[in-house]
Structures are given as C-alpha cells and as structure tokens.
Length: 408
Image 1 (cartoon, rainbow, N blue to C red):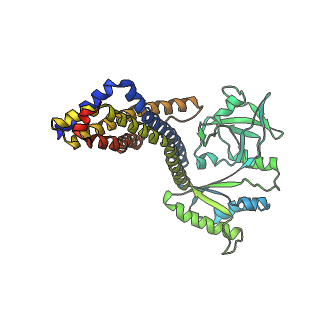
Image 2: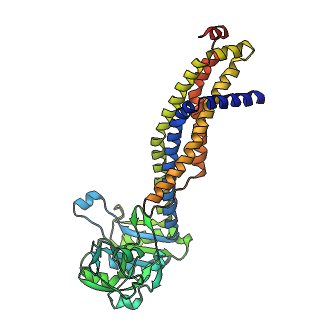
Image 3: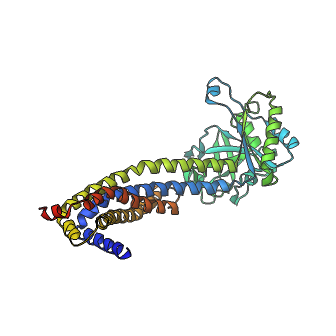
C-alpha cells in the first residue's frame, strides 16, 4: 500500500512538472484564496494582540464608572451624568476601593503653540491619574496635589503633541494655549500607541479643578467618569456590587429602575474586545475564503481535462492489472498535491502581504500569523483537493479498459 502511495505521488509530481504552466494556473485560485485568508487573519490578529496588551496594561483590578443612557433618551434630552458628590459617597462607603480618579474631557479645544495648532484630547484629571490609569511620565513630572488645590495652569502632554505642535525636543517649560488660557508644560507621558485607529498620545492632561474653572463650576460635566482601582483583584466583583448599591442609593433610583451608570472592569473590556475580534476574524476570513471555492472548481475542471487527455494511458494501466482504486488514488493524489502546493505558496504570499500592508499603515501593529491559521490553510487546501478531485478521479477509475485503449 505504501509503495502504491509513493508511486502515485511520484506520478503526480511528474505530471505537474510536465505541464508547469497549466499546473500553476490551476493552483492560482488556491494561491489567491489562501493568501487572502492569511493576509486578513494576520492583520486582524496583529491588531487584536496589540490592543489586548494595552488592555492588560490597564490592570486587572481597575473598574471604569461612566454615565449610561440610550440614544433614544439622548434624543429626548435625557442625559444621565455622574456628579462630583458621587466621589465622596464612593470614598466613604466602599471599603474595597484603593484609589479613585475623576476625569472629564474639555470639548474639542484647539491646542496652540506659536502658530501651530492641533485638535487634541484635553482631559481634566487628578494627580492619581497616572497610578490608576498606569500611565507615567518619561520626562518632567506629573500633576501634584498643590497643582490641583491651587488650580494651576500646568499640563502634561502625550509624546505625539511634540510633533504635531512642533514643540522643542525637550518641551518642559514651554507654554501652550487652549480655551483662552495659557498652560506651562511640566511633563511628557510615555508612549501609549493607538487603539481602534486613534492615537492615545495626542493628549493633554490638566488639573481637575483647573478644568472645572475653565468650563464653569456650575456647568454639568456630561463626560465625567471615574476610574477605580481596588485593593486586590479578588475584590473586583464584590467592589462592583458595593459601588452599584452606593450609586443607586445616591441617585435615588427605585428598585425597578435600571442603573443610570455603567460599571466595566478592564478584564470585561478585554474579553468583550477579544470576542468582537474573534467574530470579525471569522466573518472576514469566511468572506475571502470564497475564492478557495473558485480555486477548487478550477482544479476540478483541469483534472477532468487531464482524465480525457490520458484516457489511453488509463486503458494501458488497467490492461496490465491496475485496479480502479489504484487509478482513483493516482488522480486524487494529483489533485491534492496541486492544492497543497498552491496552499503553501499562498501561505508565504499571504504572510508577506499582511506584513507589508501593516508596515505601510502608520503606527499599525505588526502582522501575526497564528498557528491555527497555518494549520487551517494546509488542511483546507488538502480538503479542497479531495472534494474537487473526487469527481475526476472517479471518472478515471470507471473507464472501461477496452474503450479507453480505442480512444483517439
């Protein structure tokens, strides 16, 4: 049996070698299909792993508290918000909390330095921002308690602001302006990269009290959120339940009323994102794998032509004792060999495409080809060869030797 298999493989390779151009064109559909699947999967997996690492950097014991309202409620003018008073309630009544950081965004100010301006994200936050958010400065210093209590006009900027505003290489001590106010740069945050296509380094962090003075202390802070760090990761679930109870009581919600706030841990966000990316990979991979079906049909057509061309050869083989299953195996192995060779070329081409596209997109993470994608490409290619090679192989095996010998 092993000898028959080896001979069938040798015969298939000789046939492919004898018709190089036709064999290449036959495999072209498989090559394009596998290359498309691998390129798409490698790009999505590279992005997924990069953002997954950023979620890990948030820390497993952190919980984000944000206002909750539907689009329908917003259209009716009903927008739920968190209040500054909620901070005191949480600090007093939730023992599991280690630290809590309030922050809000100042709506779309143009940040200027000299004649250059940038539409950066300006966040008003407390000195606990770097500990809770796990973002630290690489030069200068972060906001201090005296900056907060004195509502000083100081700012910590992201690394990309240096380029977009054409600031000096060492921007400490430079002055930037927005909302009609001047701020002295006191620190530069470490590079955070991109998330969901948006730079996390085009950011300006100012003291929370300074931000309240800019927008007006009496104005509702619609974008106010809290980031809470728990004393231990094992206290996250219990802490979330306690936070929910305290906030519901503070907001005077009835037992039948839904929460007007959202609680999300970094682990929950990471899992939700992983599920979304897995679904995206499945859908995108399924769409581009349709080209594999086209490639399989191409292999079946060429193999049917090959059976017709080699009818006399099949007749001679049967006349000297070849069995139908021997003939079927020979043609089936030839179809599988064409598919697997096409799959191997497509695999290399797909990785090259994924890597090249990732490098062409600024700040895009490197492509990653998971082992399961390689295994899937190999077995899928072989499966296409089997499925679409069965009909030609069966036709060859059923030929009558006398009719085959008389075929012209």
